[in-house]
Amino acid sequence: MTTAAKGTWLSAEEAGFLTAGPGRAAETVLARLIDQGLLRVSRDGQVSAVHQDGQGATTSVEARMLSFARTSIQFDALVLATRNCTEVAQLYRQLLSRGLMRVPRRSHGSWWFSLVVAGVAVVLGFFSPVFLIAAVIALGFFGWQYGNGPITKAGREALGQVKASDRVHVVALYGFDGKVRGKDVGELFDFPRRVVRTVPRKPARARRGSIWNGGGGGSWSSCGSSGCGSGSSCGGGSSCGGGGGGD
View 1 (tube, rainbow, N blue to C red):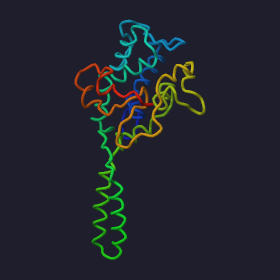
View 2 (cartoon, rainbow, N blue to C red):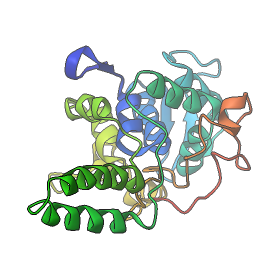
View 3 (tube, rainbow, N blue to C red):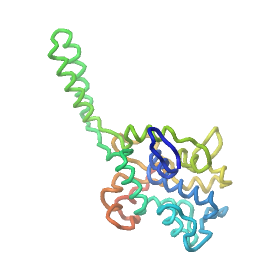
């Protein structure tokens, strides 16, 4: 567990989720299970569980991933399957309930107009104070129209305390396909570059107000609110499993 600001505790998978969504949480769980010797990865990227009974799992997400790996499964397919599972959706709901995340509000296309009105009202406020009140109202409306992201202030503060203290937390913060001090993260696990590159990278720019997946690709804006939260297996056709264009 990782201690965060104001007594908030984050597990590595929670830190991964806050960093880049459910795909990164899945990558983090994969890293930890490899680190604990519960999963083995071949040079061609096939992942398999060391035990067939889920032995060694400490969280529900770990147990789910180990169940997926009872038969050999490709590295990226394991990340995608785990990203889409009910247990990761539950992790999202837990972060919501703790006030570390929120359902994002999509920005309105005319937000710039409110900003212009506020600017004009500030200028006119030099001549009549009543316009300063109008400026405050316009700025408030601008803030509402501009939308917000999925991470709350408390979530950002908590995540800011997480350090890359071991290779599992390095994956949580940077992903298998990331770099730390110019070195590929995958090298910490002796993975060939071709294996870690199968996990899609996050988009260069994410639309404000949307929730994008930083590992494993695809949209996760519906997770916890529909398909994944209803007890389904969250497979490829569910609202949390669609997309695939991600990172």
